[in-house]
Length: 248
Image (spheres, rainbow, N blue to C red):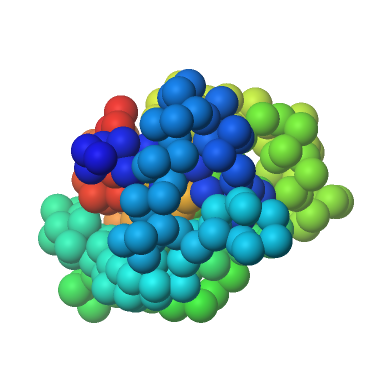
């Protein structure tokens, strides 16, 4: 069996679809049932799949799951992101961050700090409100409005005088983010803090993280935001390509 067919078959197994019968696989892949049966038997013999004695359905084997866990540890998102973050900090001179969505907050999971004496410190583990962070806006912007509203902690807390506290205005701001390709936080989270964030996509083109830079507002005039945004977008796309994004 060709390798690409093996991968097509393995991709059918998901957390929501842990077991499959011969008929289900044949239907999903539009393969003849006889070909499907032979392929599944070959993958079982190779140790990739296990077959239930009771139901005859197939599932991913413990042997393959162990290999997957090893790959996960060796290619963690933080490890893969670090080169892009280092290049971003070198290009902008500012602190770069990797942020992921956890429940209804953004969490900083990796950071490269600015070499400048006055800087914004990238605190790994810090949590951010979704409506007041450039990285979090990048995490939200490409989701449906209904999902965005379900993720927000209402009423939206005012962190500074510039914080957007209206859900309607936030949705408009996120529409601008989609049009630009990057998000901006201009002193909405902290006084004298500016940040620019862009989405990171996985092999399905889903947004799974965001890369951002953060800096003192006193050092970042508004007219340089497009140039900074271009650097941030480039870094996010580089990481997305490493994650297998087909359109990045």
